[in-house]
Image (tube, rainbow, N blue to C red; front, side):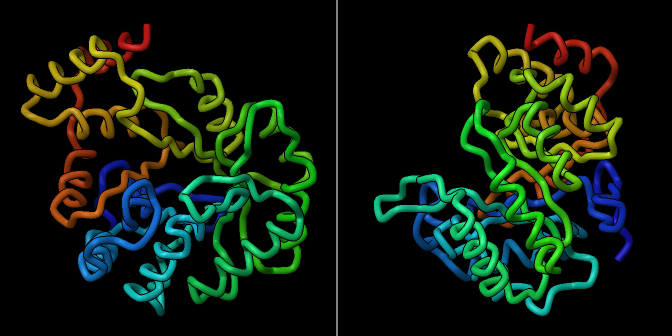
Length: 284
């Protein structure tokens, strides 16, 4: 189907065309991305609706649940539409209490890639992001493992999550990087320079927590702009991100079909220049 979603499309890695308005599947689990959803049929319906709306970029991980989200994606969509591209993450796991231990040893990464392939029902993963544990951590060994799996044909493209510009450069000395997933929103602008640098290099930037970490004053400004435009704070935040840079890809998550439709429609909100200026000033 033709893609008329807000922001149009982006060429990821030179050969994967994805809608800039995507879908993050983490919320298809129980609370805190742990355990099964309260209503599995509803979760399946959300995924199918995302594709019906024209979304061609779904973000997931086998450690969401764990395993739950990938199993739902397979149930809902396999065999997958030819234009749908699934991006997954490795580098962490879940313990029996729902904790998030790091799992970035070579054998753990190889097993994680295998598990993602098996549960998604794929022979090759379109994109695998390495989730990094901290800004001072070297990515050479774990990214090198993923680069080997890419050479073996198990992965098409590689990305990074929760990284600095220095870690991106370190990874790029090993293999091409097609996307970076970091915390970024109107109020949290620490990656401004990184976003611009990645855009110049043809690398996508995928922000998470579009409404996370706002102060009451910052939230008040966002609420005010949304009210003036007859919109919602979430819609305005998503629209601002799309306007911020052409390499930004959105992956807002939800477990509700109605909320999914609102996110897709909301991202298309037209922001006048005065509203953009007001929002740009929120971060100080």
